[in-house]
Structures are given as structure tokens and as C-alpha cells.
Image (cartoon, rainbow, N blue to C red):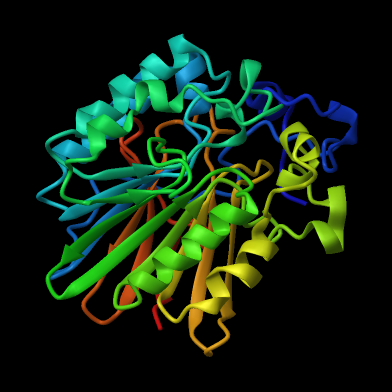
Length: 348
């Protein structure tokens, strides 16, 4: 059972009683007990490779440790040329309490990328409702990340067709050499009609490699969230939240997104999500309906000290059609070389 601490529970702002969380009896004093930390700087990126950076769950930075978030995005700007960074993906729970003060921190951090790097984002459960309680789908995201700021960006593709002025669901296009990508960003627990729209986007851009980002998809046990099979045995499934109950369960978990979206298209290569606690890591490779391999990854560092200790995931795309995964913290200037934090994927 992965380690979980009382700090993990309190920092996450969970309403779930602590006693209900498995593994709590095995409290770990060292948040890096299983890590293989190597001092930086990072080795040079391979010739011809490029990087897509991933920022999961910045909620605790926004609530009380903003310098970690600011340093992440500043480092990405500074490393743009050296690491050939082409895009930045935020996996949701941008804030912890959906308050103006926390959105201001997020806006300040992410706007450091403007004019330097394209960035794409999705909302998490803590970005919804009063106090981040996800009792409904009201969010301040569009106040602080309005579509007017992104519509003219060269990478901007579009938004959910029934909510065209909202950035809660969006897609984006970028190219590196002869490789073309579409990033589809979906809300927490996507509604069925949002999944319909996402299918249309994936089909429209079938000539592009597709990446799905959404807040809740993989669980820490290396399986997708699956409410029908596991129910609340997998903690924090979108189906267990008040917004799901208020909408007659009009939400999708990871298994439903796999069945109704990802597996139905030949062009998906990756899915990425945050959200899950415990060790905050998981991955799974599955065959689509056409027999193509799709890699699915959970990555979340919010349980580390100081809001997440600056950890981010770097996806280094190589010329041999592999992706090297590198987890790095610019605040610590360290790489984590453990098997869960540093590995290579072969793309279909």
C-alpha cells in the first residue's frame, strides 16, 4: 500500500473522514522514502528531441506556497530553448478553494508563460463550487483564464460547442517538425455531451497524434477509475462527488472515457491526469479498438512538502518514437530517478 500521511489529507482539503482512508496506519515520516534523487542540472536533451511539460495539481501552491508555482513556470521559460519545450499541460486542481485570491496566484504563475510557451489546462474538482467543494460546476476559471486571452493564440483550436465562450473544455493544436498533435482538455468527470464533442474533435483531427488531459482518469493502483466495477473502493471517483449526484450521474470516469472516447480512435497516444493521492503515480498501457497502444499516466505531487516541492513531469519525445519520462523539481534542482518517476514509453 503506498504511503499516506495526515499532512496528505489535510493539505488536500478532503471532506472524507481520515479514518476511512486505507494505509493510514503505515504513516511515513519521509516523503522521499522511495525516491532516488539525483542533483541537477538535468542531462542535456537528446539531439532532435523535444519536451512537453506537465504541471499537476497546483492547488496547495495557490493556497499557501505560491513561490513553488512561480518557480515552475519561470524555469520552463528559462529552459525553453535548452530543452526544446513545445507545450505545457496543466492537469487540474489549479486552485484548492476556487477563491479569487487563489485564482490570482494561478493567473500570475501561468501568465509567465505568455509569449514564450503555449499552455493548456483543465479544471479539477477543487476548481468547482463554493470553497472548491464540487457541489456544482460553477467555477471562477473563466474569470481568470478567459477565452478572450487565448482565442488568438496560434495553438488555440476551439471549445466545447455548447459552451463556446468557456475554457472548461478546449482543444489545442501544435506541431514539431513533421509531427502534429491535438491536445483535448476535458473537465472533471466530463459530461456525456462533452464526450460526444471530444469524439468529434478526435475524428476531425485524425491525422494528428492525440493527447487527452483530464483531472480524474487513472487511479494509483495502475488501473483506470471504474465506478461500475469498484465503486467507492477507488477513492475520489468523479461519480462520488456532489456535482455527479446533482446531475443524475452525468459524469464520466476513466473507464467510461476509455470505452466511449479514447479506445475508439486510432490517433490517441497518451492520457494524463492528476487528482489521486497516496503515492500520486500510476500508469497503464492498453490496446485501442484498432489494436494501437495508448499509454495512460497518473502524476500528482501535491503530497510533497511546500505544496509539491516544485515537482513537474517532463515528457521528452525522441526521434525513435519513444518518450522518456523525467520528473524534476526546479526548486530542489533534483531529478527523481526511481522506476516510477523515470522511464521510457514506446509510442504506437
